[in-house]
Length: 327
Image (tube, rainbow, N blue to C red; front, side, top):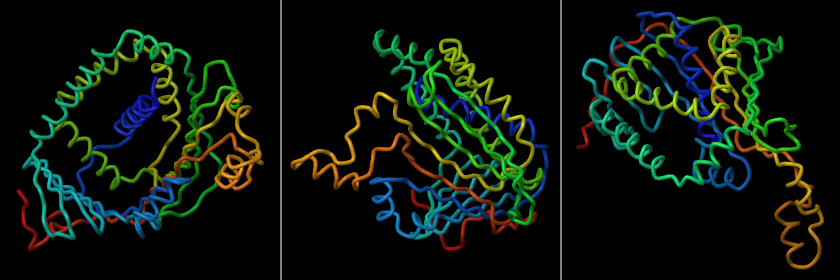
């Protein structure tokens, strides 16, 4: 089983839990949230130089729901979704222009992606398929949820800290022996906030309107994969059980993803000195004379709700005056 499959399973269960917990409400809302993603190592330095202030300080986005429209935008670009018109407006604030994509066009894109995926699966050599099935059987995923007791105020609401840790490793072995991956989510839960649930409800209506048939087809494919890979069923069951423990609305989520080298890989890693000669000098320069570490942080992402307003205007979800459509 691939890491992408694992992430998809967890996201699917999370959306299902939100659908069950979120009440159906009909209210306007306007929020602000800040998102920042920090990559480590060389990739982090490259992203920092290319992204400028946005990469360093993060991006602040506004989200507004008014009737059948939702707008999400930052200083650079934005998107307006109209459920009645069945259109998506992608807005470029720098160029003062926008492009229109219909729901029908989005459905066609999804169908093409499904067809490509089905063809790739059909064309997969039997040997590769066998290796994939075996890898799925050997994968063990553990989901752990802990409430720390820590609290703080976020966007005017009292929030409690919950740690959700997802560990993927080889079945029957300790993480430090087999190696694997650890995703730690520091979630700060506020009370159930109806205004934020309205955003969730709008997103669900959008996905249903655009991908209704396709999502049902994907669900069938997902069920088939679950039957083929028993580990996938365990992931879904374990994650679903733990998600029920999250009672509230996430106001701040800090996610850290780490890779863990196996004991065998650590044994083969070069020593801090790196040896002599040119190769040793290069090794010392790259590693900074540090001992190789078993855990490596890939990235940290932070999403925080800054403000929640239970009122939104028509202007909040409208295309700015003077912007022209780009065909």
